[in-house]
Length: 398
Ligand code: FES
Ligand SMILES: [Fe+2]
Image (cartoon, rainbow, N blue to C red):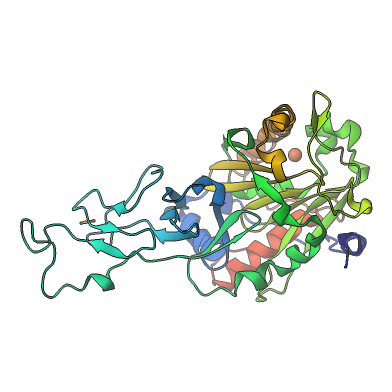
């Protein structure tokens, strides 16, 4: 089996930034005018992350989601599959749900009470033919089910392709799935409330991606972390596909000195079959556009970025553990300690992304410098975004 170690070595000869490389212009971080164009080019045309399937854990759970202004519904059917629909009634366009609805048998519109099965079928149209007459000639219910959104679940995350025209998700994710094959991602499970966390930052979502891509800021921003996982212990991860190719682009960094998580002396359960060469490896990858992922021997996490406005982003964190370690009370102390440790790290990053957001209002900043080695993963993100904006023929994409 090809180990990611081979890929790690290849990264040494990976992307190197040059003095000619340019970043995205400030307006992509500050202007409301850029919002819709960016949503279409960077989120709707490909596969974007909508959330974690654990957010609709039980049959009948219905959860409204907002993807840069697009109202969507995440639904767990009675059979256990995850569906995504446009969150809009087919009758007069009412938004169907604006808060979590656990354990529903149907989705009922709050306006005229049309109701839909969890598979989207329109199954009741009360009084449509007059009082207490629920059917009417000339109206074929079967044509008016909820409109589905193409979706796929991987690593517990729900991905959506809004325009329906992207290559199959399996093809798109193949390079990262291959890289992380040794971590057998199906072995990780999301637990309950002690495995989830969310915070809001006053910054554009892209700055959260950029900050996640690089380890360069470790000594300044994470001095505690840098004591045992130093900058020199890290390596770049870059996967840059063809501009029009089907493969996902991703970039980030890895460490060779990960310490397994522990609380009060107890350790979390390790993956049983991870090759010894990877026991102390941790890899942190931004899967563009908006999923920030991490894998280790005993835990995996995802941070899903939910853009709220050009200068506001919700970061939703999901921690997953191996087998029973996700839910067993015996591991509660270790889970709590691990959650606190990540919260500390992620909070340390807030001033950095918010500071960069403030800096994007300066006309003196023109996309900045990408240093050859340290900023190479960040450059890959900019190349990815620029390629997609240019493909949409959006003026001033550079
Ligand atoms: S708008 Fe939904 S039932 Fe009329
Ligand atoms: Fe950081």
